Image (cartoon, rainbow, N blue to C red; front, side, top):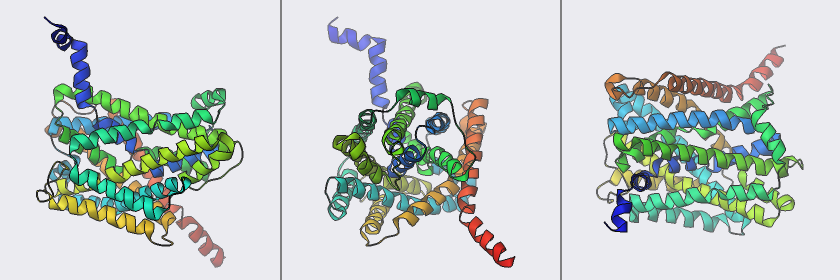
Length: 427
């Protein structure tokens, strides 16, 4: 028996090769979570509250892991995507309501990602009128000329590049003793701004489109129950990478911006503000991470939207399909990118309002999606013996309730000042 045959028969080698074959859906889905909106949220949290909000990443990680595992298990057991399952179990009307909102939200989300491309490239002296169209063209070529395996390898490379935020944070020279203390000794405040940021961190970790993309990727990959443990490891690594990147973004901004009283409104502001405190290289590394995250998400978001909309209504979908085989898929994908690019390049476009309303729609739809998921994953008719256990249900329902509270807060926040003004006038 030669060396190659011995290696092939080694169970550890075999398991490692199987894991490499399964690797992808969990890491890609988790990494895309750190998009321009997520990076902005973490940057603002670090700039305003320093290290004090690092503790929120622990419950965020638990919630993300449990929800993503549900997606994985449903995809493996049923062999169907989440959109398909919702249509079968809740009817066309509810499906249409969910997906109409998701399409609007994902157009806004994609526009936000291209805003991240524009902001990050401006730090390198590249105007948005060059960076945004070129990135959009690259996204289109990847989807139409590539295939799933090539795209997934590029996505995995992008996921790896997000670890550059670790370098940016280390160069900021944080007080690691303070960092450790903040992680395990929460200093909760009950004022509205603090609570909004806490809920924002938790809410930005889990987005509606992620649940559909994750399950569609599992189906596209053809993962079976025999490969479940390897796919679960992929999910764990993806969720861990998501929280690690978020951790170092908060640390970088806390160690520099918070210490020097600098306020920011978006992630590109954080990259620029780092320069005088951590050096030009730290600023450029932060900006590079923002560009990678934005370009990455600008690819995945419209792809995910096209995937689950076509899946829900029975159209062919997938980047392994030719354009004449899946015209609806490519038409929807191209339309989302085109509209998002027009929004970003339009002079004086209300980007802040678009971002806010996009997050409102996301927050309103996510509890609906999670309730649908929890119902289906607890159905023996759908899942057989692979239904949720008590811990999974507890985390799932707790996350749903918190996100419903977040939704109510986001809706009522602009209403409260108006009501107070009316009452004041009446007095």
